[in-house]
Length: 177
Ligand code: S3P
Image (cartoon, rainbow, N blue to C red; front, top):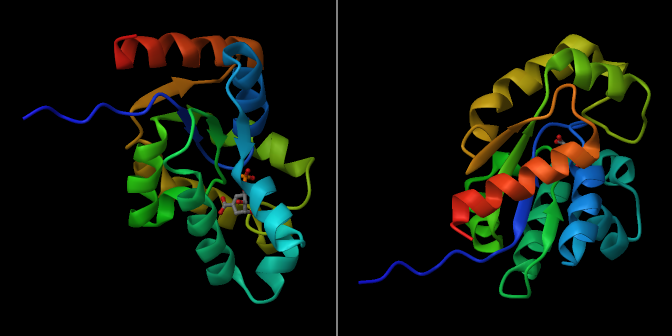
């Protein structure tokens, strides 16, 4: 029996601040495929921000919306998808991610992520209010999950254009195209 071939899209995973949205947008312009930012898609559908959803009705609601948004993208055209950092937490999300294409983990160290997160707002699980050591512990707990990606791209010291080019090169190599 033949294995069904994997779809040709590219799915970016990684912790908050890893550059998934910026690299995804760049990949969209390099490939000509539509770029979808899953968080932005959820916010658009819900008509409220992620901090609002986390505050009420709460994180489980957001996670449900995240899975629903992901499911709605399957079965369509090839796309570049930037996911939220917590997408790797639900087993059912993995099979949906696989249906969308090659899963690429954008890897960055804690110092880099922390430096970026300190300067940004709007991430209920990625700000210093609850203490940065809690955010770092979350990052550490998630590392083995991110590492289940098809491809791991080390992004430290690379400009986003260079990261995007490396992603394309590795995806082509991996998928034999
Ligand atoms: C989250 C990451 C966020 C967003 C939400 C939860 C997480 O996305 O989905 O705030 O659990 O890591 P980014 O990774 O794009 O910041």
